[in-house]
Figure 1 (tube, one colour):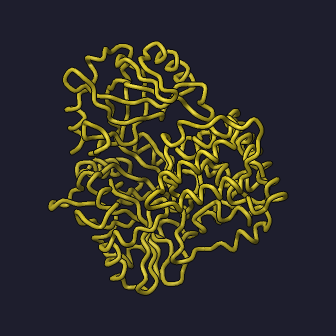
Figure 2 (figure 1 turned 135 degrees about the horizontal axis):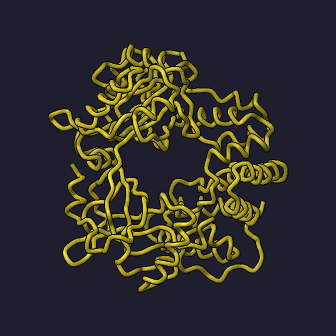
Length: 502
């Protein structure tokens, strides 16, 4: 299959708001791939979701900024592109940087202008055409004539939509049903939606008694144990077993032969309060540093019995029977809103992020963020100044999109990060015109602007960062509104930002 077909489908998906229309576009491409080039199914599935199959290629935006003249006609095949990135991912050692640059130039020279733009986007994670993994699963269901739930469940069990794509397209629901939970094979994690209050979250979760879980400011982990063999993976299913000897020791000490647990690890101070997230994240990425403590909130399997389909209430009973209380996420089970709100307030007083409200009747399910797990976190806001803005990609390619955020620092400004979250189409149109008026430099990708426009930013926390000169960065920053009523001199200072470090 030609890469041009995938790029055209990506553009078509970006051009429509209709979820059903997006799904049908994806289904048409997937169906054609299965018929004409079945060996390309896995790669096309991954590309339609906006991701390379390789975790790392050694490439970044700077590697692709200077491209050779594009090809006049499409000639690249999906297989050729995948093989090129396989070679790039394998390069290491002396001379690898030069070899990577030469390989990249050869690839880009054979790409059309549209393909070059798409390749830049997929390498940098900027293909935002609206085709997320869940939407590709819907496309697979349509193309294969199977139930979307069957695709989602198989993908959850296999840990990847790519791994079940061929089965969905050619084997039907029987082939999908063959993907079951296997101890030692990571499972896609269940995710939570959001609500503005505990009361709203309890209603969204179905009402009645709910589990009110403490939302820890840690790093998500999934733990598999069979005998003495233990596997620890991250939310993205990367194997980090060697980095977590504490977790391995806890898992091996459990009174069972096989188990699959869902939870988090976090750094705790001597008083039992959580340390800043950056300390947890830094330790989770290495084998040295502060000790991490696991805290488990769900169990998917125990001693030969799969538990993903049993109600939450039963899973929690099983969890408590096998995991010592000191390694369980603190929770309250109640149907009383006032009691739940008081518990949430106590959680915040202890330094945690918030709570997750969980239906007691729901199974464990990956995929879309549903209403059976609902997180509630306090929202912090800062008034910051826009220092620069990046050109958008995909559906946003005609606008200026990702903004660089700065706080006041003496007579100047300190960058805290970037965001494109929270922007409506109307906001994108407005800010494109506004930042073109303020532009002082344009390198073709980043437009530097005069620091005059104040923007209100919501964020989940502040962490230490060596990436930015102020030494801190915002976590999960998103735009609330532009503040035309505030001059830059009234924007928040870097000292104010640092008070959120805790």
